Amino acid sequence: MGIVKKFRIKSFKKKNSIIEFDKVSLSFGNRLILDNISFKINEGQIFGMLGPNGVGKSTIFNLITGLVSPKHGKIKINGEDVTNYPIYLRTKKFKVGYVPQYGGFFSDLTLHDNLKAISEIVIDNMNLRKEKIDFLLSKFELENVKNIKAKFLSGGQKKKLVIALSLLSDPKLLLLDECFAALDILTIKMLQEIIVNLQYENKITICICDHQARDLLACVDVAMILSNCKIVAQDTPSNLVKNINAKNAYFGDSFKFN
Image (tube, rainbow, N blue to C red; front, top):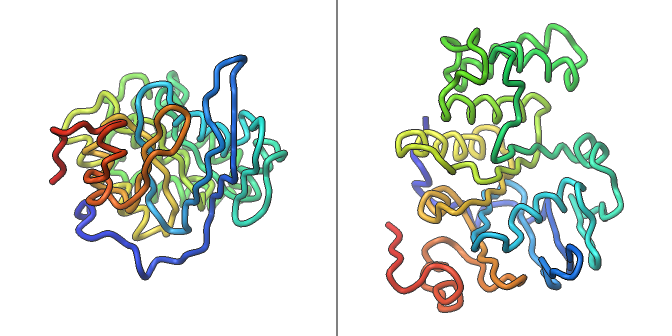
């Protein structure tokens, strides 16, 4: 495993944006969720989203995947307007992977059979399926639990499994929803290292939303704060925690990082 963000990748990172929100607004009934927000996620970046409950972090993931559509504005992936593209097309054409906060696996199947079932959908070549499954079992150190039903795995093992399932289709963009929730300190550290290694080794662009601010800031290049339907601040972790708008909206005065 690698060391969690020994340094931030900034100046030498590709500047091509893989995700772009252009003046996006969304309401559920009379409740405004996102109000004219614009931001970009650059290729190869680990990008974080923070904010209070109900502020719209998971909604942004749903907008990226196509589960919901904006009321106003455009969403671009790799520079192409995908606002009206269906879920399957975004996943297949742009290789978007998604790791949900809860579930994401078949509870009554073994860990190995979960990987086998999804591989049959996303990988045509049978030999390549086996090769990819064996690689992921080794990469995430899951060989010793591969014949255990998913519902009996530990929290960390379940999270490893869901990430492994998402990697079967070789995503270029990976969305991690509340990935640190309800995990112990050692498991969080393990997951942070996995995320950083996916960036370094697999060149995957990663977007994380979570309430665990310190855990998220430890492994991202850039993060933004959402509050009252708006983006109130966006910067590197060290700069973000000093930002007065971020302090007022989310961190408070007593929050310390590093």
